[in-house]
Length: 309
Image 1 (tube, one colour):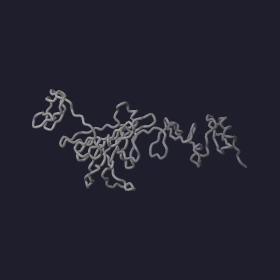
Image 2 (cartoon, helix red, strand yellow):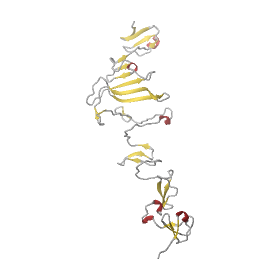
Image 3 (cartoon, one colour):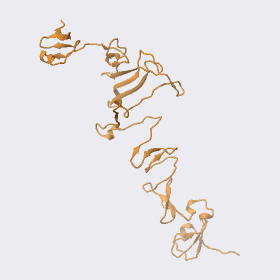
Image 4 (cartoon, one colour):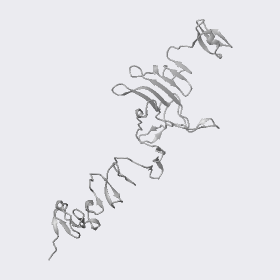
């Protein structure tokens, strides 16, 4: 002999408000509900902490409106876990996987070192990345600097000890282990590119590297700087570059190995001054100019101006 409860489908249960103590069994979901005279469909009495394997059968959850991949939050007002919309949901603690939303608070490394200060909105930890850092300068406004540093000059030695940009470069032995750089190696390029209607093309390059004609020794890496403007064909040649070497020699369009302190691969135009302008100079022996009053090349020798021709 057995007691038979009021029964029907879950949809039918939701169309009635059972009396207090009245039991309902749903034939499709196989659950039992008890009435309290006010709750439509009654309150579930099976599942809960008694062994249910689904969230929608737990008495402390309300999954109304829940969507795929939604996060659950605990509502202290209803004492239930509910689906959290993106705009109001929050997650505290560790997270692994794909995240779509806003992050509030500070970010720490595994050793508890502060990386991003959520209070001041600043990156305070070191940035060590294996990919390029891209800054959209267009969003900063016209002429806005993409890098600003603030430091102090040490008055005892007259050297700025705070503002530095250090570029470390070594040869790769094939397994990402550093090896000694060699003469002529490029260490760092600064490339300015402009949009030609289809893509961004280089217009000017500042190349910093190892001097081509000096040997690298222990504790010594002789350097050189090359200024490279691209011509109307979109290319450059040694005849239109400027090279400054570790020996203090400067080449202007004369190749990358200047033969003198100043090596010019083309015409030179000297300063053109009138006699009055010339006499206003603080002249030193060895100074040369073109005197437009006399139409003469002149040099300052032995304390006086003399015509060279």
